[in-house]
Length: 222
Image 1 (cartoon, helix red, strand yellow):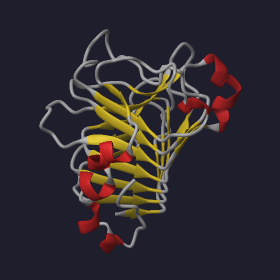
Image 2 (cartoon, rainbow, N blue to C red):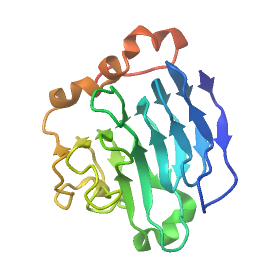
Image 3 (tube, rainbow, N blue to C red):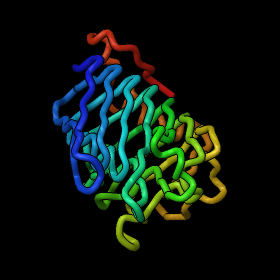
Image 4 (cartoon, rainbow, N blue to C red):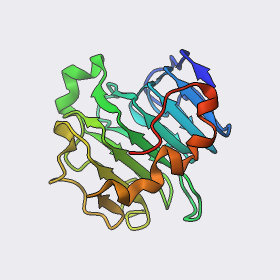
């Protein structure tokens, strides 16, 4: 467990520069900050819970194949190099039987201060499929206007577009409008919270069995 720690990679934009890699089961990060550009936070494996944390980056800056839930967090998109787009998540589920994915719940996706002057000239996306069965869900979060109307970006042509699972439910903000979203076979517009209850803290990472012992607040459902 980590509380109130800043994990910062000062390399700057240009190539992969991880600020933190977590591969421990039942890891909890509370009121921490993860600061970098490309590949800031590697949620490598196992069950992970992030509460009231800040994550800064540009390309694939939350990536890996853990079962990771971000609850009440701030996700800040930074200014990339000229000609590049921003992508928040690159989830790496490679087997359909893996109980892994990235869940962003009751959080906010915003522009970092240095990105504000150029945000209209740069395209930013919620995620792209790093692996064949990539799985990412945004639930009841605020999405600012920085996110492109398509929402999601292909990784390489048609790769994984029919086998991934991407979903959005109950989000707000100008970037949450769904009319321009991708029409991939693996992308889902969710109408009821019950349809994605398997991705709640209580079910997806069995949070009720281990998070209470940390003293960190959490919501077990949606």
